[in-house]
Image (cartoon, rainbow over all chains, first blue to last red):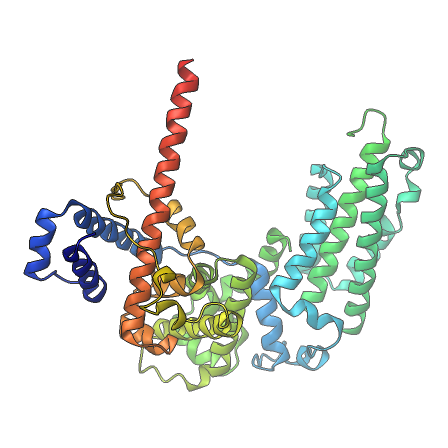
Length: 229
Length: 219
């Protein structure tokens, strides 16, 4: 790089935008390298401007978590929302889930546990989704709790005969994952009992129920003759 | 969290508030209205999240920062008097949140002053004599550029995102980052130089892959 090129680069750094002075333009006429540099900077700048107009939707958990925090800080003063505030100040174990990243990470862990078995039952997903949607719109947690307890949660890995007979690493993995989900359900249920109006607590409880249903569906599929391995 | 389920939860409320104008939402949010908070969030969260994502290059951190930015916004919304555009106010606030976080986190390893020392030959990318220049214009796309931005050192990335992506002026960046205008210019220049190198490497790699593909299809 000769002196002129260095000067040109310094000028480019200081000038940033707008027309280059005449000496710089004259240098560009004769220097291919600086011409390329200048053109590349323009290309990068133009492309970056396009990036600036792009928008990216954050995951829904950010809003859920934010709303929870707004309620905890009593920034939301809705008559319906106000009573919630007193009940869940961000203390204790639940405050861990006030951060979307932490909550997401935990649910990610639960999801990863489910995915280790390598199969998600479409049937189970669809039916559980439908149940959950209906329950979210129409009922409080106790109702959902009783339905799941009767129909799903009382079932454990030991209740599936085919699974008991199998002694594979996958079966062991299913049992471990069921244990993880059961523990999480217990924590969520405790929280919902303590804070019945806590929307986020209910969200996590539903998510945990769903994971359990999916794991059980997978386990049952495996226990059937010709089921997925 | 399952997005389809959370979508169900918020759908009803969203339709109620979607008709609200921004000015109405601000006024109601100042009175603590939940629907107004959500309306403001829905209007601006995509932009704020995109900014956070580009500044930190990490989704988990970007989510936390987005939450922090809106939390601060809603804490201060009572003080908004409409002298400036609300989006500008929010945007600046979001930038401040990100920068504060980054400053706390990365100060020891990426001091702005340190990396712009003119005596430090290794502080920035240099042009090599006789190095062949690949012209980027028309060859790079947004995906390549985004990947290259993610690879920038944090100090370079912050100035580049603020200036070239978000459109802040050097004097504004200097104020936000508590550095001199000269520093801001110098960081931007080095960021562009580094990006150029990264993008040229990408182009070379793509060209190599094409040659290999042509070779293997020929044989």
